[in-house]
Image 1: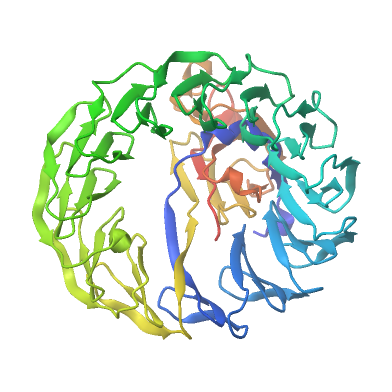
Image 2: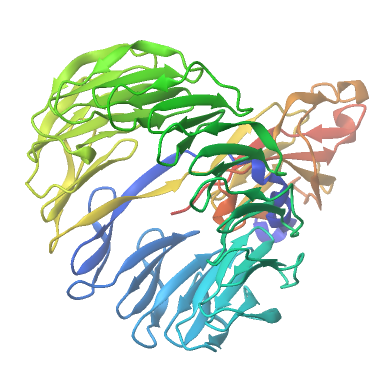
Length: 628
């Protein structure tokens, strides 16, 4: 059976996924190999430390490594090189034109900025369209997103499509300094010294220009369908079409307001109070008065807002209802607050206290035993408290886990908490690995005085010190050989969010569904209909989100046939003489779709199968992952 002789359909989900973006899931991150830079080279190393790519660029090179879709982009003194995930070169070197070169990445394009022009390339290094020459006196800058390439000169902003064709008219600069551009979804926001303007992707203005009310350039924050403009004396909220939402929020303190955005909440911080608003500019709850002299700080969790000033910490729900009593400080310095979705940890000069999200104290205060303020790390159900002489582990209820671990000398980043373990670099001489119950794993790893950092993946530990990089398993056993460098090494794991194909639900009739291809951004996944009737009409449905209760087709004459998802998209096909059909689904390249899930099922006309005359396959839930 050959694909060339079978019905084969191809489609792309880009448009449909715009509606599905809120369904993005928490991605499982997997790592394989790592990126290593030092004073004269950049390397891509495999999981065993073998070199997949090694570029020596001279003393103290300007070299960076970035990822886009299934490609790795290396920018160095000679130009830009494109690698695949294995480290193999793709296409030719994109030579530098002038004294300096940088890269902007987005969607399925690599945009190269030289001294006097901008060039657009595809992910295989093929040039797209003509170079875009600069019109001003300074080097151009670029923003990429939403299928657009926006080129910023000192005198204008120009919008181009992904193939370098101009869109709309240039947007002139009314100020002295270069305009700032922000891209969000289908909106482009341009700010210069005098005003803010909102445009759609075709360069058409939305609403009137938003003129500044103070002396300094406005600050713009874009969050979904809201655009927040901050002037010297007020904050204004607009929808994405430039219509004001609510009244201006006039400052009440002496300095320009700070703004934090979290979902449907807009938090405005003055020097004397904190106020919370919904996305339409309506106030939520009462202002939270500052009892100190410095502006309050705000931390946000899934369902809590935590506000700290010079004297105390207060916990509120998202309706600004206080949770528990204010937590007064016990020392002279402002409290430090570390939060998770389930815990609020308050650090004073002499103790650490754990609270649940309702402000209830958990366990006894953890008194300081060293001379410095304690440091805290929190991840999931574990809290690490570090003193100058020991490290202690607690659960979210404040119960100690295991025995205290004595240390000689640890700095701020010498104690790190990871999802599977934690590590301690003690006295610049050893790295010790502990499980999350404070049990030592394996033998200590000796390091040199120049230890720089430790990183962990799901099952590997990366130790960077002096002029070498080594990998270890979680028992402290070295994996592969050490990689020696020219000095000052920096390394990070090469990780990607793994996509998945999950089969679930029963089939009715003989038809079955299968799939092949890697479910990552920029790839194509092929969904196959097998063992259906020959030359039969069929269709593949694509839905977003599993139905809590599958739709049973039994009452309609098809017992045992279940519809597993809603069905906003349908693709028809005809099976071949062997009852086979296939549809290829192109997944968008843009990383905004990471974690989006969709469900596929096939329905084939099969009169003998049941009274309804239909066969239904089981379902496949696809989660879109990241290739690099």
